[in-house]
Image 1 (cartoon, rainbow, N blue to C red):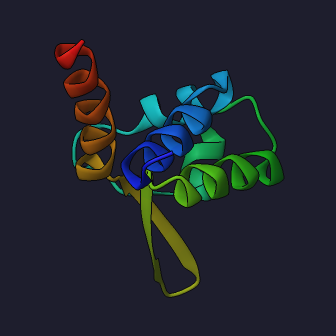
Image 2: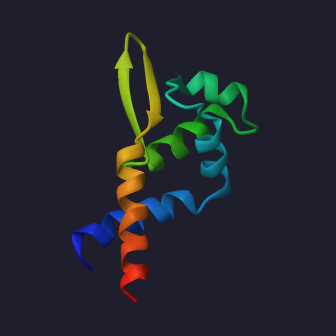
Length: 94
């Protein structure tokens, strides 16, 4: 599989879970959230949210930065768009 498609696969796998989709939809445009803020609006435990955030981060769907004791997450729009464009380009070429 070409490298671009490996990235596509990771993004789609990460987004294939309903809980991760809900976490992703929690973010408002440009918003940075920490685990606690996501847990507040989720039905999941803190450890479950952390697990899903890790998967989204590893897939490149989210970026993060540690500030003090907290880790803040935000949508990596560029990476997600690149993955979606790769699929759209493939479909257009068919």
